[in-house]
Image 1 (cartoon, one colour):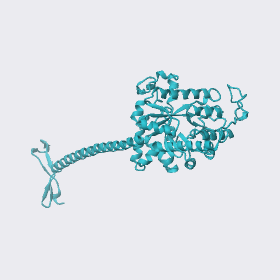
Image 2 (tube, one colour; image 1 turned 90 degrees about the horizontal axis):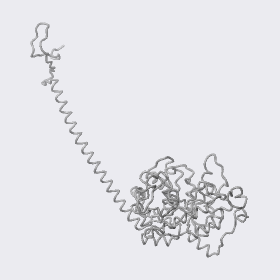
Image 3 (tube, one colour; image 1 turned 90 degrees about the vertical axis):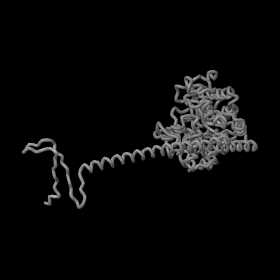
Amino acid sequence: INETHLPRMTSNAKLDGRTKVGRPRITVICYHRHKIVSKPYFIALEHLLLRLWLAGMRVVVVWLLLQLQTGKVGLAQHLEARLDVVRRILLETSLLMSHNDLPWNIRKFLKNQLINFRFAEDLRELSPWSRSTWSHTDLPRLREGMVAATVLHFWSAYVPCSTQHLDAVQLALEQIDIIRRLVAKYPGHMTLVTNTQGIKQAHETGMLASLIGVEGGHAIGTSLGVLRMLYQLGARYLTLTHTCNVPWADCSIADEPGHLPHIGGLSKFGTMVVREMNRLGMIVDLSHVSVPTMLDTLRISRAPVIFSHSSAHALCNSSRNVPDHVLRLLAENGGLMMVAFYPHFISCSESATLQDVVAHINHIRDVAGVDHVGIGAGYDGINITPFGLEDVSRYPYLLAELLGSGRWTEADLQKLAGKNLIRVFEKVEEVRDRLLARGEQPIDERIPVEDVYGRTYCRSLKGQTK
């Protein structure tokens, strides 16, 4: 072994025999060509490199934080720019919402005591609204959402299924009454509208255009005469069923596993209901109905129909949603699918996001076309809302998200926001006028007694059927 490869011990202490005095210092000296490198040198070099690395990492972290902050500012600026575009769109085009359940909340919380309802204030700060998860609408939030100056709102005259064959007609009348009185209470903000010309006038004057939709076919009490009177009072759409079958149509529950259809779609009298609505100029709403009822209605209706608050079955297989083959038939009908915001219809779970709603809108557009999709929401009738769409003030953010995707032009957003629903309403009026010019008369038929026998708990059958 060459000794130049061996370590050498040196010490400042003296060694006395085998007794070591003091602590020796051991230095490893390696002879390699002309270089002599010691262990302390390695340690010092490592410390230096470590300090340089840490200093470099600090610089990188600071740079990343600056970039992140700059990115956040950039994203915020980009969002604000898109919101500016949306605000301009909403100044040019009415934002039309097909379903809002505020009138039922007035009944539920205030017993229809409208004198105690302070719609011009932020209800989140007022009892009992502040304690409720069902409250999403008031004038301040409508203004914040660029809605009140540019919107058509269909206020729902909702009638619970528990009233069927009992006092459903009475409750429908009372809910129409509360809507009309609510509009009259705020004449500087709201106006009652019953036709497309009224929508345009409301938009020009910056008023909240208020229309009435009746939710639940049981509200007509199996009477075409009641249907006509609801129209005379201002109702401009009727949802054929709610979450219960009516004697002349099946609801969506019939499509669920373990449930048998009651009729299998529309009965003969149900066909008469749809035809009479066409004659009146009343929009047929297919939300809540079964798929066979959808198909029967699309087959016989002479005017476009709507789904006022449903979503895409392909993305969430709730029976309340609409399958793709029906969406394609809806496009042929010229009708409109208006997307609901309820998480159970969007994500089939307790939670959903604005992006989930966007996915439904895009899917319906892909299947039916941009002319056949709208916004239904369902505020004040749901107790859970998607993250990012907590109340009516958030509508612009939905449109801004679509605009930022690159798929939606300003013209597309105008259709989604309101032009599609106005087109459907105009076509319904056109069909009404054509049938009137043709001399089509009101339908006098009554529902067969066997269709309601055993279901008329608080009324006489005599004189009501044949």
